[in-house]
Length: 166
Image (cartoon, rainbow, N blue to C red; front, side, top):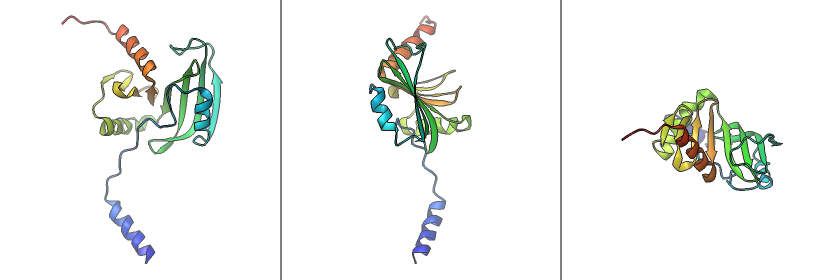
């Protein structure tokens, strides 16, 4: 009897559309948190975890230190991924989640389904200012930024964009 119910349930669900992948920023990525705290949060969520000191510092807000955690096997949008977490002066500011180029369009569609239209599209990728997020083209990845990092990136983008007369 249980097998019959299971088969019926599978048949009924077979015609249903699959839900878009969950593209929300994972709770484990608490911006502003120190390296040690994020490392402890990620330990059970990553197949492997590696902490690196980045020298010379390249992150725009880093004044004293820059660290990066590389996490392999973190599940995002339904699949295990490589994630790179960037810390500037012991504060999490950037998260890069690598995605195969073939998945980029479906990830952008999932962002649109969840959050609506992007703020803008630029050669870099599809940008959601209200989320501090983007889906980058090359390399293909999802980026989440802290509010302070997003402000710095927006200022840099505005400085690089020529002003137009009204």
